[in-house]
Image 1 (cartoon, rainbow, N blue to C red):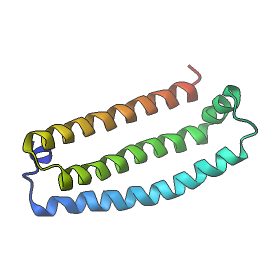
Image 2: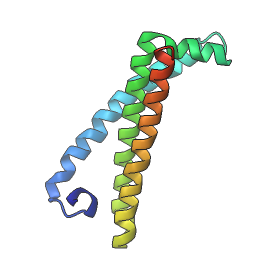
Image 3: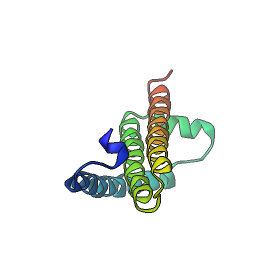
Image 4: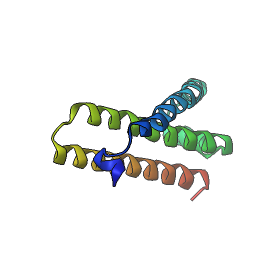
Length: 120
């Protein structure tokens, strides 16, 4: 509960800081890969998108992209909430809602990519 209420020690932010930096580096490379992959796609219709996602290497890289994006976004939104939301009840509710929303996004993205990638 200390993660949600903000009662953890001052040193607890170091892990989040490193997580934000490492996920930013990962997103730089994954984002470049994704942009170049989209440019190289023969078309943007449904069949081309499914063929792109179904390629085994693309499945792995898309999963890494979505998980890194959700984690990086969560850490960024957490910092904004901690810095600018001062009412205790809204602060806690915002942190919980942010964690749930980012978790749902990540689960839906991973499920969708795996469903297409495994040919289901």
